[in-house]
Image 1: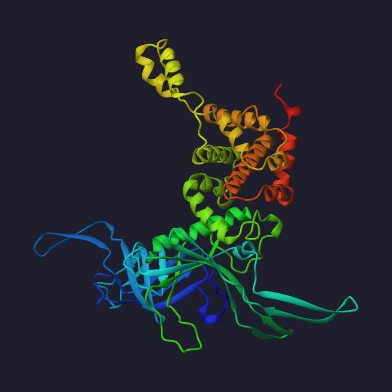
Image 2: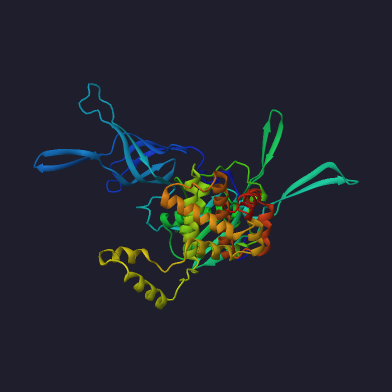
Length: 503
């Protein structure tokens, strides 16, 4: 599909999750649209969403045991949905809980009630019945460092030179970038660039000229979209960028396109659609003005794995290997303070990944295993046979699984990561077993445990990258160029080498 970037005015800007906002208007419950209460919705990146009402919804839990008698019970009423109209926009609040209510019935001076309600999600620009209400046609999501991962930009720079030396002239130009598109199971994914118009700002020290190029992913299914599916899409893109950049990647904004809302337009302007911004708390919140990560710390971009190739592979692998991917990415989003926690997490990720890759070969054939087990059970008292039988499994050991995982990625890359696979598999297995069975790791130093965690993390990541089709040459480059992985390889040579064999 031939489609290029478009200009983006300031009024088109989505609502960034790291910026505060305020909307004053009227609010009501879906089953009582005529009972509207004035109030102000506030969003703070740290504190979340808070609705301050001048008035109140009935949050007390009541019953009528007898005619004309109302009984009040403990607890408060919660609301799945609250609707509103503020700043000329429809608004939906989801997951609403009353935080405080102040009623003035019987007070000496008559004044309105006050109520504060917290919400989990706000949709600014649309009115829906709930998270599963399919009323959207597309979702657009921006994630930290997505532009770096896209490996493309609308900007081109030129520096003038005379006789091989800069002469003070130059220019910055905008060249539209063609939108990249791929279909995955009936859903269209687009990698889009959109830029602001030129803006000149007069400062006391001089004039500043600015433009902004924003890369984002647009996802449009064949049918209609719900908020719950849009949140899953945002997580899908967020996890991809987190894997590619080897660090936590925060969501900067999430915008939905309301279905069937094309507005009239003149013949020389594209048709516009009504959009709705989503305010929520993702796994990590992005900082839209922070500097991008250094390019040497990026594991892959769309240059090494083109957009049309990586997206279908990622959608398939993310679903099949999601548990292992979640476990390994948790070390980026919320690293534990103690090495023991990280050890259990990363070794667990390796085991789960091994199963997800479908290489869970049985050490013995079914017939062999049954014969051996039956022979052993004959030596066990009858009252203990059930417990003994449950403990005997025809599964690979942890060491087997680690060997298998080390054998899958590019072997030159594995060799650069660690000098001795046997030593790594042995020491990792012993560390995990000691910690799981004895509650401590007396045979491992703190530095060795750190090396085990780092190397095992790298092995899991290399396996995921291998599964995504990252070429062996790029896998080797990562081990040579990535600062953190170079340190990991150095620690492996120091702590996981033959010269440190057990005494």
